[in-house]
Image 1: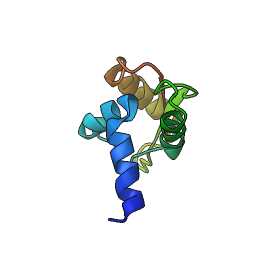
Image 2: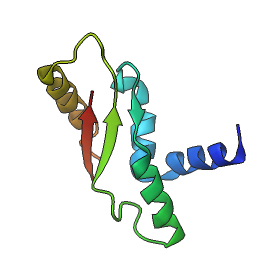
Image 3: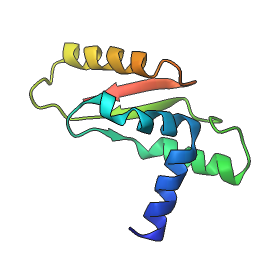
Length: 97
């Protein structure tokens, strides 16, 4: 792992929102699932400028690809489930297939 990759991983694991998401990653239980890098980028700026950790972060984007269910209803069901799973985080969880 490169120094940059290790630095990004460390940032994700110490940020209160991404750390919570990562701690429950197995519970997400979706195929080809990712967290968007935009939350990581803003988390880094917040550290650099000593802002509150969630300053400027409106949501966390969780994206996945489920070929078996491309329906809007399926995406709504997954979104509802993940919003419940992360109901304790101080920002909105946005889920897209």
